[in-house]
Length: 145
Image 1 (cartoon, rainbow, N blue to C red):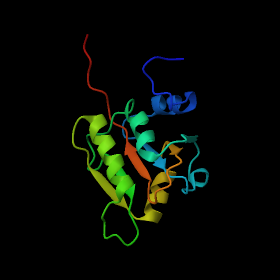
Image 2: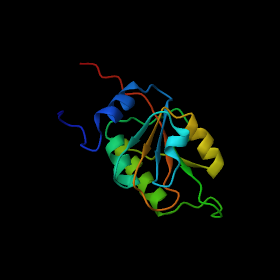
Image 3: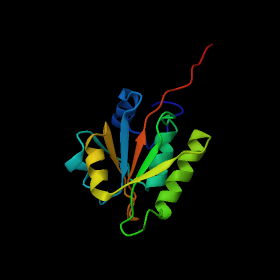
């Protein structure tokens, strides 16, 4: 039992998050995503994508050295427009980072290929379509006592 860690973050996921380095990527995917087909390290969090993102981002610094700190699977036929779950996760990311976060989109099959290279995949029970995201890990600020 640890203090200050969201109870949604189990020990295996905590280990994966702590093991990641700057520039490593983490996929947060919906319940329909083929997580076990693309990921070697798959963790489940039985909540929606925004709740999972909030728990993860309470520990996970987003990369400030990339164009898009957050990527989403593009909604097919939307012309690049985001849907509700994507707007919800972006709002969570901006709140956690304390700044505006940039979210880019990836076509469905390009997202699958990128997810295969992620350090870990977190599968949620998100049931809204296209609730799939990739986060790029950043660095912690220099804390001088």
